[in-house]
Structure formats: C-alpha cells, structure tokens
Image 1: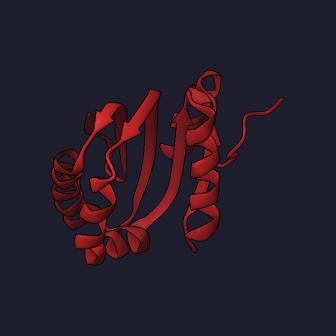
Image 2: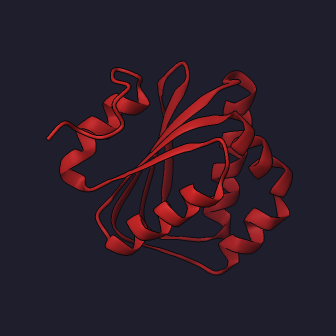
Length: 130
C-alpha cells in the first residue's frame, strides 16, 4: 500500500508498506500529478516500512507514465528514504546516483526524525551529527 500525505507547502511523505501493485502505483502517480500542479518544487520523505514488495507490473505502469516521472524528477529537490530493509536502502542509493539534480539521502529507522527535519528544511545537514 502507498499513502501520500502533505507535510508542508513543499514537502510530502510517501509511506510504502506491504505489497503494492500497478494499480497502487497508478493511484499514487495520479495523486503526484495533482501535487506537482500545486508544488513547483517538491521534497519527499519516503518511509518504506518492513520489507515492502513490488509487483513486476509496477515497472510497466511507471513506463506508461514516463512523462509524469520526468516531470517529477525536474520538480523534486530532496528525497529522504527511511527504510527498514537493507535491500531498499541499497536500491535507493543506486537510484539516487542515477538521477541528476535530485539530492537523495538514505536513512535507517533510528534516523527517521533527522530525515524528516531535513526534508522539512529544519536543517541543511543531510546526515545527523555523530
């Protein structure tokens, strides 16, 4: 399941948990299209709980909506990924390295408060002090 919630005039939280399908992604992409109309610059806190799983049909759904995906990339500035599963954190780091112009940071669950503060621009330090 994917849930999208506004956090501020320029930030949203996307919670992913359990198994999600092409239909879930289509609904989320429709929500994102409306959000992008209201937020010319966007920061995202992605909270991936547990070991979320993705149907292979999700890839086809994203490919069908490629213009929207490219629009998202142009408008997104910061992405903080908080994930329990190591494979999600590794995949997110790879994705972040491949997408130009978007500042990705990946966090473990104990760092979730800092990830939220960074996305909400309460701090410019992407990593917690320590």
